Length: 295
Image (cartoon, rainbow, N blue to C red; front, side, top):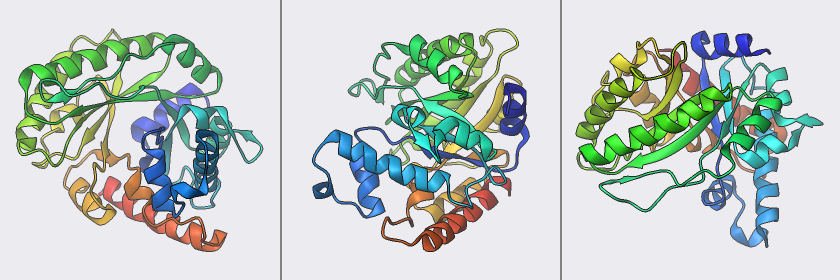
């Protein structure tokens, strides 16, 4: 797929984006969910090799194709690895799946009710390498734990500043200011975030668009103005800790918002499954998430 094909697929395709970008801090939890305990590996290299094997198994399963999966978000090590004898981004493109790359380096400590992104050293070099590898876009995550106007404003400002660097490098940024779904004032945070993003979108550089990855709102349709905004290519939803049935039920209440699930996609997969069992479980999850995304 060339860039034009990928932008058309992401903008207008019927499906969802798989999040396969667990990083160092979340990898042990992802492996435990897959049935591999921490005593099964003795170093970070062994841990990352195991999670890479899991991701390759997902990406090369028969049910994981561009028919229902529009894109996949990758961890940097995954982008640099191989699947099916080819670089991972090429393998995804062969299957009709658009590759994205997680570029943030984790979160700062909480201040003013939010966690900003840590600095991203070497971002430009990473972006150039990603583009050379056929990656279409990027993703970066911040977290909102309380309805703090100043904190949420700071998060949006930081996200859009980095997004401009990504646009300048010829890639599509996914901006992810996650609202903690367990926060007491979550609905208020959704509204503040929506309004701050609407202001920031007015300043996106000419002829460019961004993508948004947001928590499923507490009140359905809160993000309608973002979904229809001309500077927004697509709005995708993170599962945010919901189990898949609940995440899909909540997502389906928001027309035009599609899934970008991680744990909710992987929760039934186990390393001891046969390939047939594995693909059947993955296919069931894909069908359920796809249905919620297109309802």
